Image (cartoon, rainbow, N blue to C red):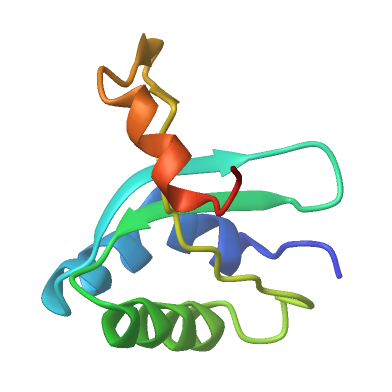
Length: 98
């Protein structure tokens, strides 16, 4: 389904971001992409319950335009903003490899 002026206005006017702040979500990146997904939103939440509420709100705001939504939880950042994690060795503790 092609986006309508209303949907584009919601993105440009940051409607989702303002609503998210009210439930304790901080959107850290919002990216229009070329590939299997049209959009990627990275955000910080206090807990998984808040993250799921954000996804429900996302579906409400863009109802009819989202065919698939995946919620992924970041477990470890090896590199962020071009800077390697100084605790990179801690990554080993996430795996049960001897």
